[in-house]
Amino acid sequence: MKMLLSLLIAATAVQAHYTFPRLVINGKSEEKDWSVTRQTKNANSKQGIENPTAADIRCYQSANAGAVSTIPAGASFYYVSTQQVNHPGPTQYYLAKVPDGKSATNWDGSGAVWFKIFTTMPTVDKNKQMTWPGQNEYKTVNATIPANTPDGEYLLRVEHIALHMAMQANKAQFYLSCSQIKITGGGSGTPGPLVSLPGAYKSSDPGILVDLGKIQNAPDTYQPPGPAVWR
Ligand SMILES: *[C@@H]1O[C@H](CO)[C@@H](O)[C@H](O)[C@H]1NC(C)=O
Ligand SMILES: [Cu+2]
Image 1 (tube, rainbow, N blue to C red):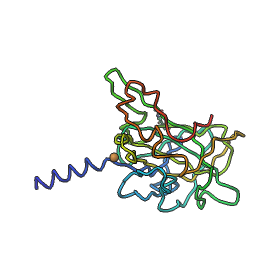
Image 2 (image 1 turned 120 degrees about the horizontal axis):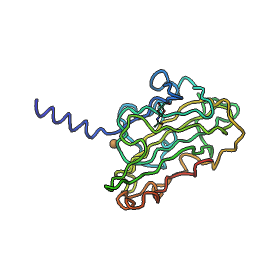
Image 3 (image 1 turned 120 degrees about the vertical axis):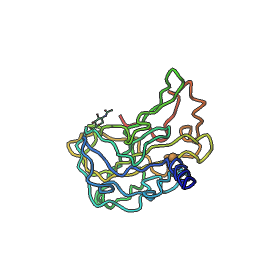
Image 4 (image 1 turned 135 degrees about the vertical axis):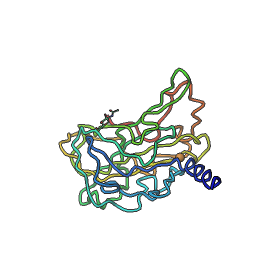
């Protein structure tokens, strides 16, 4: 019995991974897990993706979702996490506009269509402890849909990159999901730069192959992978 218990505890400690099954807009959560957020292949295993050039880096989905959530431009949002987001690393949000003739419920997000709307940077306190916005919470960090985003249907992609083993190639872990949304009340901005996923990341990117211990004294030199945030 005692041995079984310690095995269970060990298994729980190893299972320090997460998924993001629910989008919360202006404080209101999607009805249930995976209703506008596309269920991911790791819904049960919670395993991250280690190869940033794999097809799964786009949405990691096992199925499209049934519904589309309406979200006003300028709205605040975050994702519920199934476990504590305990690993160090950035959180990034991307959008991709659904082309004419397609719908958010059936579009695959292919092509140079993704733009980044948010990223995070680490800070180091006086005890030399590095922390990231949202670290150790059961949700991802809050961000807003840029007010200037044109109206229409989009895929919204959340990504947390766990960097605790990232000093070795292909050991950063990507945790992500995509939601089907419709932006209303937006503007006439021209979002960019536009990138494709996979395509935007390489294993050797300085924000993916990185020894966090070496940037301890200069956290603002961290380079989040992918394009610049659209302003
Ligand atoms: C994030 O958004 C939620 C819901 O809109 C709000 O209750 C919370 O205070 C926000 N947190 C921060 C740190 O701004
Ligand atoms: Cu983990």
